[in-house]
Image (cartoon, rainbow, N blue to C red; front, side):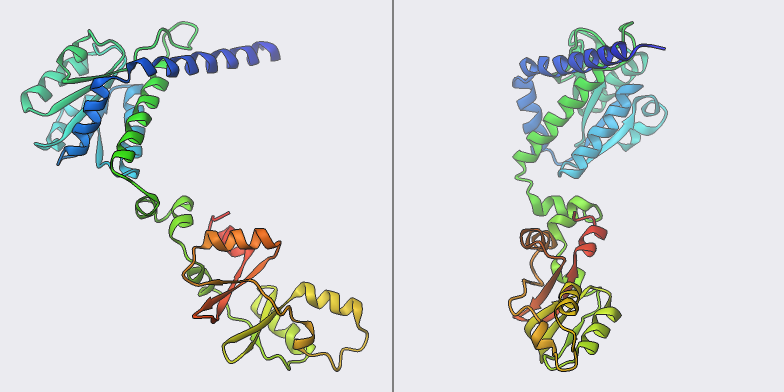
Length: 321
């Protein structure tokens, strides 16, 4: 077994090498990189990203990032491409081919086929003078001095460099498209990040019960209403107008303060200045209100009338927190 110091030293060395590899890419962001961004933005087709081995795995991640930020993209495994998958490439598609050496057998076969088809080919390659580099229309140079692997064999810094270059390209495309929060929400409707951008307070409140009680209600009625609706609070209303709110905390404080509860009404217990939020406001804004006021429940309104209630736990379940 390696010692604790040896393990820590190896980890730090790996991180430092990979950090240096990424910083080394800065000087490779050149005219070709700019032309690639312009080319993809102006293209009427998709971006096909391909590679072999570990580069193929990075290619899949780049495709995922492209698609989630507004650049239509498809992954094509380089080995499968020469066995039928070339059929997925359409006339206006742009192909990005990932390879550290640019000289693997699959890439040597694939590159001329792509050239014959007339598709623009971008080589994300560590050796610009390789077979891929020489045939590519544009080069994204991902050269690294050495792998973090002590034998300089296992792809580590090289794949990190590819990943970082792919992210740099995706972010530049995102800016060029003016891709904003609304766009992100549209592409991520099921994720927690997307929910922060589109889920509204009313969308949550409508799933809950709507606890409400008249200001003249007895303590017993207040407790029953809070218990039945399981939100830890009840709105005190007249018609649909909000007069106040009573929480389970108010009930506990009342029991500590009074011994005779017969004459106490809801109006005696309620907070007359409850925090509210319009149903059209985002759920993330509801969370901000709850945090800022150190409360657990928030009343939701529609045209200044009582619409429903949100509990902190609702936001937790939705992944907003």
